[in-house]
Image (cartoon, rainbow, N blue to C red; front, side, top):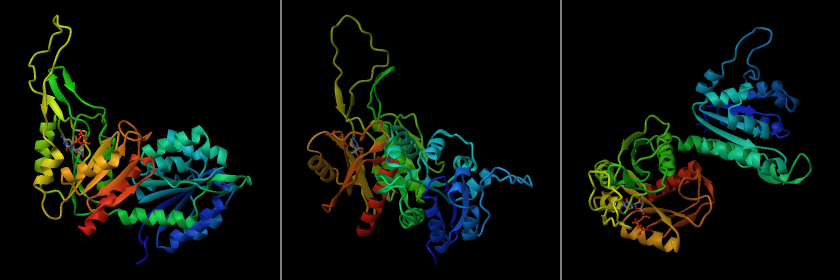
Length: 404
Ligand code: CTP
């Protein structure tokens, strides 16, 4: 069977010199069995004709909201629902900006806004445009909205300048498309439990001890596992943003003790448990049932007692075939500390993020991680969006499970 047999792909083409490569991309997708609907921006037609593209795809190209002579309306909503994947290649600076900001003044952007499934963009533009703060800001926005960015390559550009801005080659884009579809069901039948976010440890009815965790990394993992076919249950401390995939079950908890109790129940039958929560290690020994008054003393002491170590407690009950993954956030001697935690907590894999790395850790949309496993394997990834980091981590988990 062909690798893209039966897949519905919307190929968005925008007005850049690299649009000629879109014909090659279209042909490669069709050859692999995909059904492709081309959507062009008006400017794209200056670079490649709709006739070429409709001949290759076997379908009329969509570009305007209406067919001028018949008044037939082209529904971007239907296209968005039809597509299993939308690929915008080339994506110009202008289209990236419109997509990032919801400026729906053409068929391509309206289709993007209606797309229910995954979206990839392959930027192509001159090096200065690519490097400009506005393009980079738009790309960062799109990445945090879940759009997959197929980075532009280095090379000679249409301006004859040499630098970063060339659209990725059609073969490389097709490879990403194939990877996307092969990942889509590779967790089918698996149950995944994920602890997410901070915990709040009550001091009195209005105060607590907490931390800056936003739950973004944990929920990115939840989304990734769900999109790959797993049944996902997230045990989440107090956070403000929740996952958008309605199939993810979220059990809301507040304190470490509550999270521990839920995790022990859920993880017992999970194939994969991921401990992404930033659990408070200590809680106040006594919770005052009335608001503590300032009174006259110059200082105050709250005695703290140890919280349960959730990851360790789950690991004590680990059964064959279960995979346990922890996170370590370290400030110094990161790798050694992460390795020690992996052993101490009896986990299979540890994802290390170091606070020394700019853009990694709490409240950011990006992360830079190193994955280490019990058998001594280490892999350091570059700075990526949390969604892309989630893809890498899940790939590593599935690799490890093949060896387990
Ligand atoms: N963890 C947990 N329960 C705790 C503390 C941590 O489940 N009470 C999990 C975290 O979710 C993470 C891993 O253990 O996956 C490591 O967390 P971290 O805070 O880095 O480790 P600690 O054991 O708390 O060690 P320390 O605070 O000394 O660095």
